[in-house]
Image 1 (cartoon, rainbow, N blue to C red):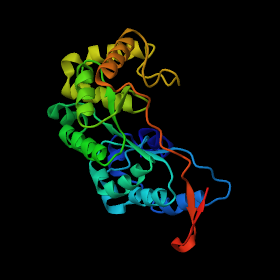
Image 2 (cartoon, one colour; image 1 turned 45 degrees about the vertical axis):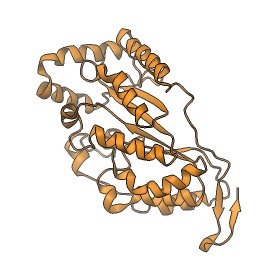
Image 3 (cartoon, rainbow, N blue to C red; image 1 turned 180 degrees about the horizontal axis):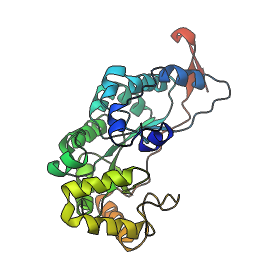
Image 4 (cartoon, rainbow, N blue to C red; image 1 turned 90 degrees about the horizontal axis):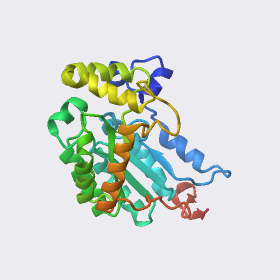
Amino acid sequence: MSGQACIYLNLSAGLDFETRLFVKANAADVLEAELRRRSYRPVFTMIGANTDCYQPIEKQHRVTRGILEVLTRFRHPVGIITKGTLIERDLDLLADLARDQLVTVGITLTTLEPALKRTLEPRAASPDARLRVMRKLADIGVPVRVMFSPVIPFVNDAELERVLEAGRDAGATSASYVLLRLPHEVKDLFRDWLQTHAPLKAAHVMSLINQSRGGKDYDSGFGTRMKGEGAFADLIAQRYRLACRRLGLDRPRFTPRCDLFRVPAAGGQAELGF
């Protein structure tokens, strides 16, 4: 569940986010029914963009696994975004999809510093573990994107070039970044984090964020919410472009194929082409 979804459900983006868990247990069945509709046309679909689809609860409920099994049978294009290592469980399905250029994976890498990771993402996989996942995915032919996100002024922004280089060395062929976003309750949670873990630079961090968000903690404008605007945001964008060019990560982002979609006949008999 994302912070945005918490608002819809009248839950906190803090403690509730980690303790009130919701599972769409029949997601794979619903997906298959949708793919079997005569009117359906395949389109590249991303999972994990709003909330990580490999959270710990997935180990028990296997919702993501079920979805990937359906997409594999239908030869449907898919993208995945995660910061977890549980994706290693599904390497068999991802290898199958990769053989037909049907999958891409983005791995979020916020920092290379274990101490900073422990305070920013205390229950997430270590930087080394995420790099290991990138390498395993790349080795089975899955196009991997290293995602430096979020970029936090005066906290991890100095690592931008090192993170992209580490991702490239682990097999990533493309990259992206997102400037820290602080919608709704997230802004208060982040301010609390700063006061706890970086009190001496909290004011400077928030000043740079405000400068990049039109004087506010957050600007939801479609054209600026991911990258920000102003001097600091422009500097990050310039550093990112130069680093990608130097590291060979500035190639067009891979988009999985949509022309292999097929609807399997009931019972796994002959397959119907799209």
